[in-house]
Length: 199
Image (tube, rainbow, N blue to C red; front, side, top):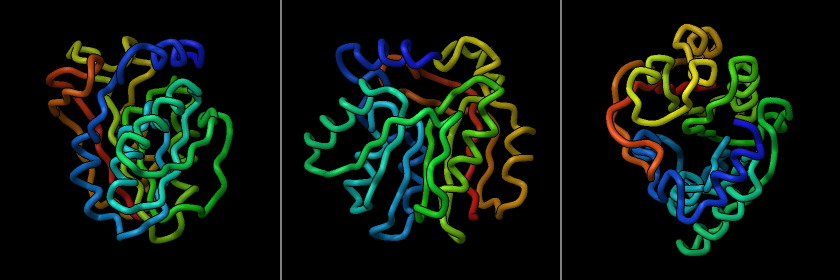
């Protein structure tokens, strides 16, 4: 979606994707060393960033939507944690290299032409030895009608992702079904790609 559409969506009452951490990130975050510097990419309304901050990590979240970032700050206040925020188009604007001990991204869906830049943007932001973890909907999600983009162009192909992460140590890769109930937009059984790599 365009920036304007995200602004409109995140300006809706309540939290579009809920306030609880994504299940995959909640499970895999156990691997992040204590008090890490973590980057959260395409983070929307901040649910994962706030969760990681509650674990004691120093968190910076990125999103192109100022409305989403505003709600993230509010959510952080409600949970009595602090997060840093930055407004950025992650398909066009690079984040500085070697900043973070770990980085995450959840359902950061962008058109095909921007996907490789986004993934490489996330990876290059992490220091050598750090972990990158993300979950996205696969192209097969188009058949599930349980959330995510309505067009294949904004979904991910597993072969593309495998080629982008090939230079790094793959700790976890999953391509298949998963149930996600996150707010009003992710409801029920879907088809995902999960990745954890070490840089």
